[in-house]
Amino acid sequence: MDNPGFTERVFSGIQPSGNLTLGNYLGAVKRFVEMQDDGIETVYCMVDLHAITVWQDPAELSRNTRELAAGFMACGLDPDRSILFNQSQVSAHAELGWIFNCVARLGWMNRMTQFKDRAGRNAERMSLGLYAYPSLMAADILVYHATHVPVGEDQKQHVELSRDIAAKFNHDFGVTFFPEPVPVIEGSATRIMSLRDGTKKMSKSDPSDMSRINLTDDADTISRKIRKARTDALPLPDSTDGLDGRPEAGNLVRIFAALGDMSESGVLEQFGGQPFSKFKPALAEIAVSTLKPISAEMRRLTGDPGEIDAILGRGADRAAAIANPILDQTFEILGTVRSRFRER
Ligand code: AQP
Image (cartoon, rainbow, N blue to C red; front, side):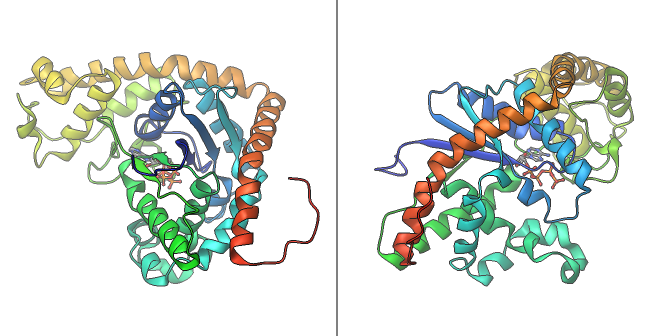
């Protein structure tokens, strides 16, 4: 057991920074649903405070948040069994985030590859929030004393940083107060790549819509995006070794395997030796049949934004009931005077 003395609890979040992609679905949400059914308490969050680390149009932010909530539920998250809410409604995240800004070291932040990837050569012009993002993410997880964090491969470094922050806090104050959360990176699709460039992650904020499949795409759009997906001139190989050095082919095979709940070798047993003109229509078919019921359910749910808001409000109340006492104890450990009565 990784965290003796702590009850197992799952936390994860997704930014409402655009449409949910097939990468988010296969790398994260599908796993969220499986963990909900594992009998552990699950807390899932639309991390709007992370989304605003880059400018968001206010109307789009609320639309994306409701759409993401609908996406979660359409994929199988049940707001009665999981706690489902948006981050900014539970202020304990931001408060613990500040405390962790004072625990985390600049050197640790400087090593975060996601900031470097996103900022590129424009680091000087990025927001301070984008730089401090991993310390808020540590607060998101640790304000629930969460022990397990299902994520895609790209978030592994951030979860590891949460462990370092928890360990340093515990050490600095001589306590065993925060658990050291474990990243859960499982399944065959922990890193789905762009349809336009097999070396780049599929991302909801990629400027090219052709680079990704959105959960809201209709059947024609999905088929067109797969037909136009970049590939090479060779047929598919007979074994997974033959995918080495062929990132686009490897990505499409991985997507097929994840959608069909089969292994990559199983896909190649079926399609090895065949050209992409044969493989792509089969991939489009399995993608459409998986996503069609999800997008139909999302459309139904987004038709009633009032109901989504009510679900998020109730989820936030349940989340705050766990987070606020943990935040209060953190302030006590720090030694801040807490004399104002507030209902917790
Ligand atoms: N391409 C991917 N393959 C597998 N998993 C992925 N995830 C994201 N992209 C892929 C996983 O989805 C969860 C939510 O991620 P996020 O929204 O918090 O931020 P992100 O990782 O930065 O995702 P995006 O889609 O690339 O968002 P933007 O474009 O706004 O930055 C995480 O668990 C992530 O690992």
